[in-house]
Length: 110
Image (cartoon, rainbow, N blue to C red; front, top):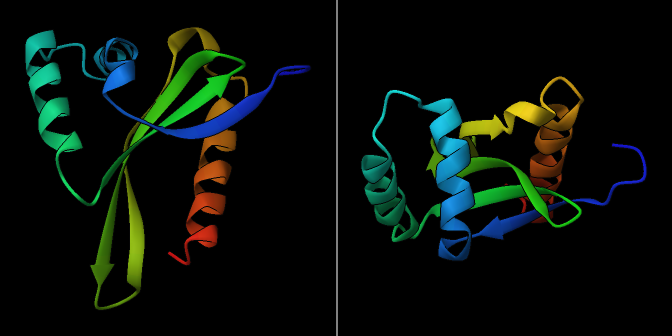
């Protein structure tokens, strides 16, 4: 991670191929065409965000995020299917991704 620019972005259909590639690492038994169909359904939902973790210009991680409202805590972000590229695992990117998501939530008072 040293000397790398790491950033969090909300991403969409323009990153579909990379999102599906990473989703396939997390869900190897699910057919690619099913992952694509589900992704298209999710991005149409108002409370859904796909978060991307970038190292320089490379997408190295994704997470689904669902903004919800609960009786016990109010507004929240429900993190779902967080995956870091197999080649980047065990290098602290997952922890960094969670910290970035926490900061994103704090900025939006979630």
